[in-house]
Image (cartoon, rainbow, N blue to C red; front, side, top):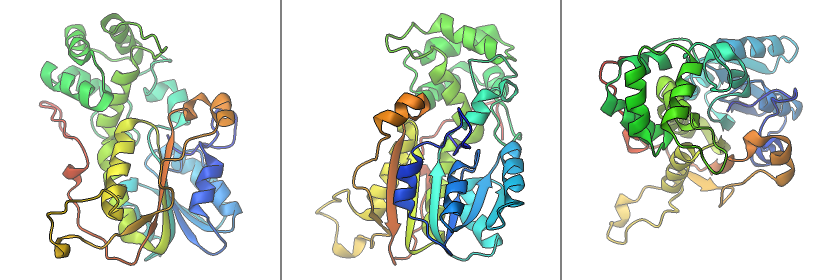
Length: 328
């Protein structure tokens, strides 16, 4: 989710906790990599800091540019947060004091049927945050059954991935979210915990369409490059795939994973981050009661050291899914 506005239904998740760990102060430069509705950005600006806000969604960019007309310390950028260091540099900042990422789909996107993100509303089966590249319909209609099942299992953690994939292929062509939702309802048994049968399939397709896990991994390494010594990185993730990437990155970068006693000392690089929160921070009961979308949120935070940024192979952080017949 991207940080939502302060309107009902679009409250930024864990705002107080984000501000406590990000600790913005007057004159600092903070990158909000997921502007969304601007909830985090507004609060950071109110704390006196300058903000470089990024979003790939044209609707979110329009909201940000409207806000920047009344808040001149905001620089709004259209683009992906995986390139947040390049965006910050283009905005005139060689180093920044903080980076915040609220990962995933925004409340605005879920609530707009025409965007195709939600199984709750019938609309075009799209799911593209930036409006470019193959859509969710393209994947459903072009991928072979084995690749589709692997995608649903890997990105959606769908236990009935094979059955859903076969049902999708048999029902082709599929053009609407309502069609796909009905297919999932037939292929997936009703869950005792109340999770809709289409939840994991829609999650998997959205992640694949927008390369969300790859973008997250690139954003973490970009933050490492652009943060000044003492700069803070705060990430709010909403499901295990995202949180696993953040946890693995910070464990490796802080040297808190234990490592191997068989490695020679010179093979161990100096930590590029130190943990601010040693365990993931969870939303309070009051917030989850008011905003059910916050229930699965986990916040992780770390502070940049003076060690040089390290090269990274994104493939080491992100599970790979191949889709024959679908090209980006």
